Image 1 (cartoon, rainbow over the protein chains, first blue to last red):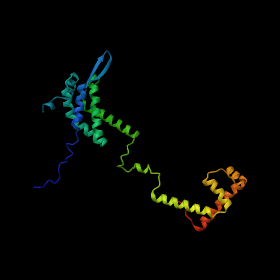
Image 2 (image 1 turned 180 degrees about the vertical axis):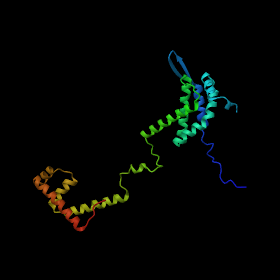
Image 3 (image 1 turned 45 degrees about the vertical axis):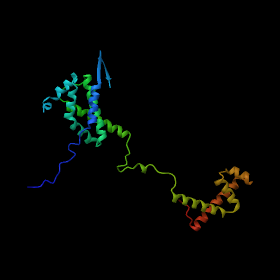
Image 4 (image 1 turned 120 degrees about the vertical axis):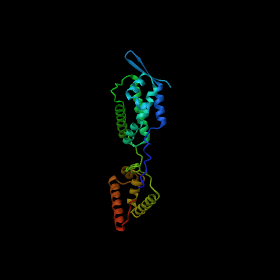
Length: 47
Length: 194
C-alpha cells in the first residue's frame, strides 16, 4: 500500500475566532436592549 | 444535528423575539466562514478578531432595532457587513500607515542620528586644527580681519572701527586672506572635508 506522506494541515481548524470574542459578543447581546418610544429607538447597555 | 435543521431565518426570528440562544447557534454555525473570510483579507489574527467582533455587534444592533429584513440571506448579509468593515480598516490604515519594520521600508532610513560618531568627530577636530594652522600662516593684517569676522562673528563695520581701517580695506584683507588660504590648500593638496 502506498504511504501517505502528506499530513493534514494543522491550520484547518485554526481559523476560528477566540472563545473570548464569541463570549464577548453573546454578553453584549444579552446586555443590549432597544427601547422604542414613538418613532425613536434608544439603545440601552446594561452590564 | 438538531441545530442544523433549524434554518437561519427561524433562528434570526427567534432571536428578535428574545431567544438569546439562537444567536449563539448562528454564530457557531457561521463563525469559521466569516472569520476565515476576514483573515483572508487582513492576514492578522488580532485585527480579524476585532473585525469579527465589530461585525456581530452591528448584526446584534440591527436585529434588536428591528431594521433587518429577512430574505433568507443571513450569511451574505453578515459577510457584507464584515466586508464593509474590512474596507473601513484599510482606509483607516492608509491614512495612518504603520511602520512595523518587517517589509522593505525601514523607518531608520528616514530617521537619522544627527550627532557625529567617534570617527567623524575626530576628523572634524583634525580639519579645524588644520584650518587654524593655515590661518597662522597668513600675514597679520589679514589674519586679524579673518579671526574677527569668522571666530568673533563681528561685522565689517565693527572690524573697521576696531582696527582703524576703512570697511573697504577690511573687506579687501578678508578677500586676500581667503585667496591666500585657498592657494596654500591647493599647493599642498590639503583635504578639509569630513
